Amino acid sequence: MLTGLYAKGVGNNAPVDSMWFQLGANMDQRERVFIGTMTAQGLGVRDRTSGEMVSISSPDQANRTIGSMDQAARRVNQQRADLGAYQNRLEHVINGIGNGAENRQAPHHGSAMPTWPRRWRAS
Image (tube, rainbow, N blue to C red; front, side, top):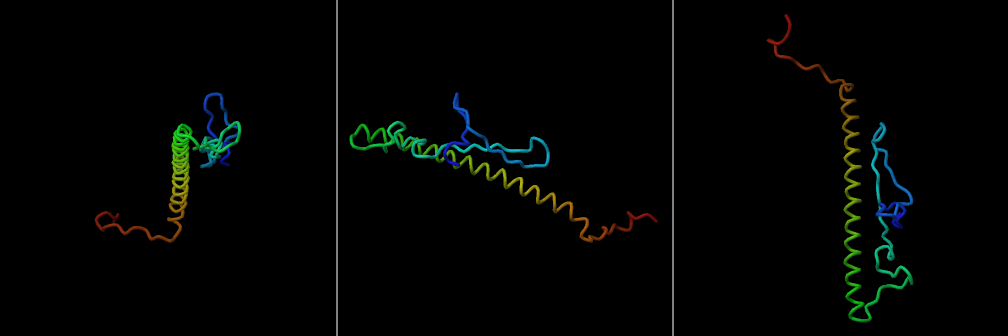
C-alpha cells in the first residue's frame, strides 16, 4: 500500500489505481484516498538508479544526504497528516451514522408522551 499504487498523480505521473471509500448510501457520498510512495527509493534515501543507500563519505555527500533526509521526513509527516485527516473524516461519518440510528430508535423505546401544563391542554 505504501509503494505508490495509491499515490496522487503529479504532472504526467498519474496514479496506477485509486482507493475510494463509499461513505453513504447515495451516489457521490464517497472519499478518495491517496497514499504516497514511502519506500526508501520513493523518499530519496536510496539512489533511484543504482539502488545504493545515500552516502556520507564526503562533506558534500553528507550535506546532500541531510537535505534528502529532511525532505523525506517532510514527506512522511505530510502523509501522516493526510492519513490522520482521512481517519477523522471516517470517524465523523461513523459517529453520524450512529447518531442517526439512535435518533430513529428513540421513539420506539416506550418513551411516554410529554406531560403538558394544564393551561395548554384542551378542555
